[in-house]
Image 1 (cartoon, rainbow, N blue to C red):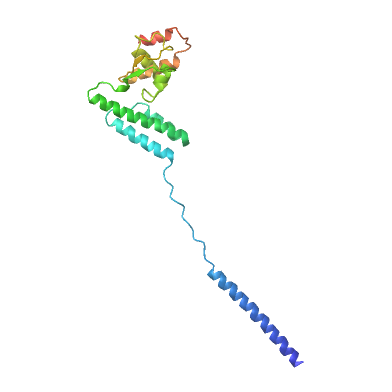
Image 2 (cartoon, rainbow, N blue to C red):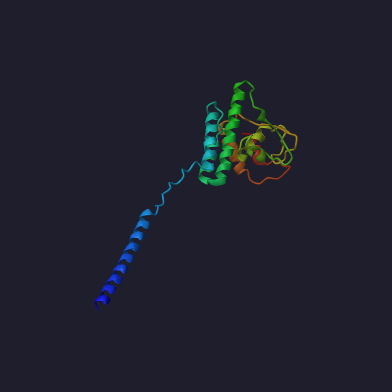
Length: 207
């Protein structure tokens, strides 16, 4: 009987020791398990839109410093900022080109050339006064086409009909009032037909 009790006690002690050793081993492993290091997010740089706008603003300010800023450059930049994404980059690049052209034109005028090389535009196949006026090297605004029409009234009978090879003068000295009148005419001109000088165009030329 005593021998049986002794064996039972030894067996129980062995079980207790085994369980205790297992717990200690688990605790040690938990202590030694490396903690995951928190990584800080990488700093976010300026977007393509922001970079394009910054370049456009720099070009605009440079042109303004010599009196060559175009009147619609700021408007284009505002549209670009509002649009965002690829459209932002496209519009911002257009504004930047206007600044670069305006700066070059102002320097040319200061040098005594009177007008820049872009003061004369040679009509190419497929051109219209609308497309020429919208070109970034001209006005960058198609609605200003009546300025070209008025400046070349001697060789343009119908504003809707121009021919490849014609050398059109580009009015660089138009006042704000002249520009506003041109835009207003472009927007309110009404119906037109090729080969006919519309009464609305005659009234505009008479202003």
